[in-house]
View 1 (spheres, rainbow, N blue to C red):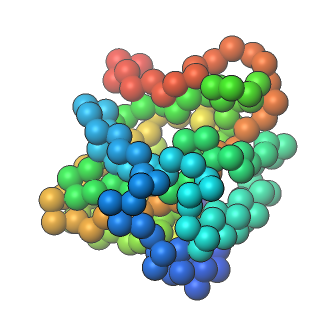
View 2: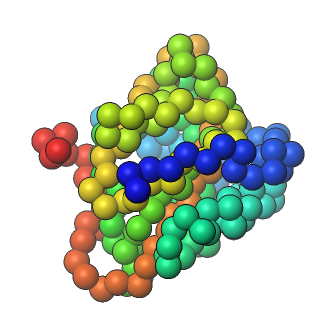
Length: 188
C-alpha cells in the first residue's frame, strides 16, 4: 500500500464539533514550526487538545484500525494530534522519522484526517510521491512511513487555515532507523 484514501472517515457531526472547538493561533497549546522546511502549527501535548478534537482522534484511530495491520496507535501522540497550516504555510518534501525518540517503536503508518476543505486554487495539497491529495472535509489518508516522501504544498496568502488531525501507527521493533524526519531533497 503506497497510500489509502478513506472518505467519510468518522462521524461528520463529530468532526464538525472538532472544527468548532479548534483553537486560535494564540492558543498556548500550539508549537510553531517556522523555517525553511515548514511553516505550520502542531499541538504540544495530548492533554491540551480540546475534548471534541480528542474524541475525533479516538474515532479516527478506530476507523483505521483494520488498515494498519498489527501496528498500534500512539495515544500519547508524539508529534501527532492537531496540525494547522496558516495562509502561506507549507511543509517541504520529507520522509517521516521511523523511530520513536524514547520508546523501542518503529513507525509504520502516518494517518491524516482533513478537518476542513481547501479549494484547489488555494494550494495545500498533500503530495505523496507524485500524487496530489487536496484537503477535503472528513477525508483520511493512511500511508506507510518507510521511505515515503511527502509534502504539503504551500497555501496561498488568501487561503483559510488548513486543519488536520494526525495519528501515527507503530510496532515494537529495536532495529535502527531515523529518529528525525529527513528533509533531504537529494534522495529519491
